[in-house]
Length: 227
Image (spheres, rainbow, N blue to C red):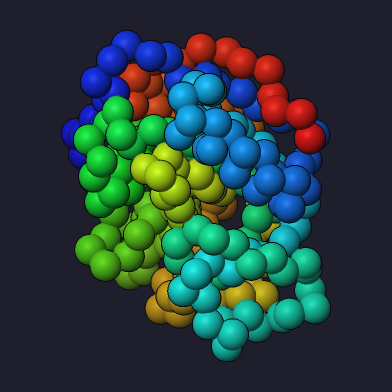
């Protein structure tokens, strides 16, 4: 898949990573504040890599019946698109705060560009992944079935994005059984480790950064947000 979603000017995207797990409510507060600052012109675009402790989030289209184990992990309502998803250790979450006013104001193309980004990163790690019509996210064919390896859920406010993508590097896949992931029952969930790809989190991060720059433009290192 070849797709770019470049800015109309040469502004660099800040790129940062939090080493320790970040609590979900604090991450959302930081994202919302940063997105507002970007919209006001007082901050640059930002990609923030992190991990969460085990939790489920409910997107704006979440259905109560898709939460199969409500007492298993904390459950948070989320303003992002989509239904229920899981976040936890071994999963790389990338929160993407980009100014779509400088990138064409095209929400559909933005989501497709996020998918192209993840597919490019996986390709560099030796994994052939694809999109599917009507199913947001990134998928891997596994014989007679298809498994989801990365989820995408974003929100736009004043044409600035937040929330983002989650790539399964080596999470505990049994944690997904407490929900119907993204409302899809006929397909499974996989990870790099499950596919036999021995990539570390740092290797996944490097692949994500290189692929991001091919789609969205150059990045510059930045300190992590204060949590």
